[in-house]
Length: 112
Image (tube, rainbow, N blue to C red; front, top):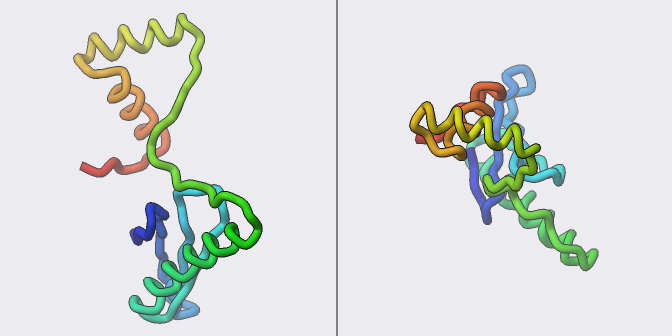
């Protein structure tokens, strides 16, 4: 993973085209980059983020902020109560319990 100004880039290698390519994964804006070496792909990532920020400035628009991991969630009270009870039975905070359930569903590995 690459990080520049809070924007996270995920890189893959295409062995048929012999090229690294990637995209920013923590925003809805489409920001992509590529290179044939590690140095090139890192530079292309930074350049792409900077180009995005400059483009937004030229348009007079605020760039989309990267996802930071905060989520406001509205639940029916009965669901809120039930999952709070379950989390307490498992001796976990509600936040931890919800995060673990969503991690199970999405199969995303959490950082330690």
